[in-house]
Image (cartoon, rainbow, N blue to C red; front, side):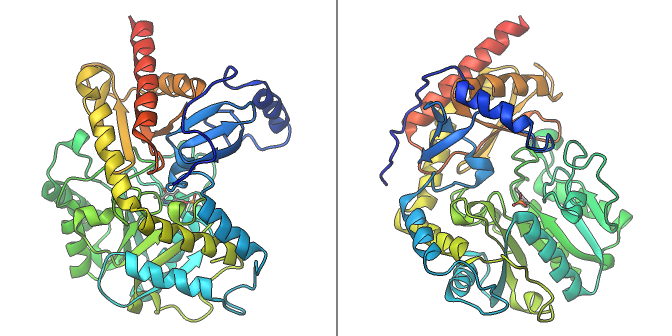
Length: 445
Ligand SMILES: *Cc1c(COP(=O)(O)O)cnc(C)c1O
């Protein structure tokens, strides 16, 4: 892979620089405050794992716009595919007069999603829209109403998906009422509950039996690795037990792979690490190199339960977005990006794997592929330490490293670089974070 920007961090001004500061002043007068920003550093272009801001500073991107640019920024093959399509045909609406790109993406999704059975897909614009459609499809198929999601889940920001999202602040506060028949149930969180997968599943199932009743449930949504919830990776065996419970009780088991899917964790889909085959899978973020595209894919009999016209949308499966997705699929195969993600995992373990032993305010380091979390706690306890995260995030962003926050207590740092990131960049970014930890320790003393 070739990069149009050298893969190195380079700071020419303070961050944010003067051009970012000027844009921020304009933005405050034109953009809703509700669209809050992690770092007010305005970007101009990017390549690979580097973002270049409007002042010419080069930042290491460990966030990928929340796990979207998994294959790197402004990849030239994806850009070429999208631009060729943009000058050929930009829209017909698939449900009026169809086109091949949409069919090709659906064929590819059937191939790469887990499960050796007949599958169908629907393409939409956003992750939340995919989750909403999965709810509709599961309800239609089962004739049931209740929807179950896990504690610490994030499923989106529309009214229905907000109701399926765990924490009230800032996603939900003051914006109800929310739809009924949505239930949050306990998740397996090994660092916090210390339970085995079987024990945690028994607890989840007991909660369902005593609060909801299996026969009422249309679908059970899980993130195989919770993203916004704080890179929570349930204990081995947890999802096996839950999926068996769903099968035995006629519940549609849905893996929300919007954040962890498409190569990010070293597999096409992160549920593969748990050895479980879901009935439906939702895909979005990383699928099209930054173009808006999302999908629901799953068992043909479930997906085909919906009457023609029952699901769809004007822009869903747009010709340009699907062209970009096809280029992303090719790239992942051509450049062995599943393996690249596994390499990133090895490099991250080697560089940051001992941080919980080295730093007393780091409680846990966990991750899979290019998806890691660092949980901050008050030293000597497991009490969440959001102040430490705020401090480290601020230090990192003002020193040219973009990292993300996460977790129901705002105490988990999310590290989600492109899988094409180099070992040198990981090392440099980790050094900046170590400087941040030293500054934090000095401040506390
Ligand atoms: C981001 C995300 C969504 C919502 O996707 P949008 O494209 O922002 O609507 C849903 N589920 C998970 C797991 C996500 O990470």
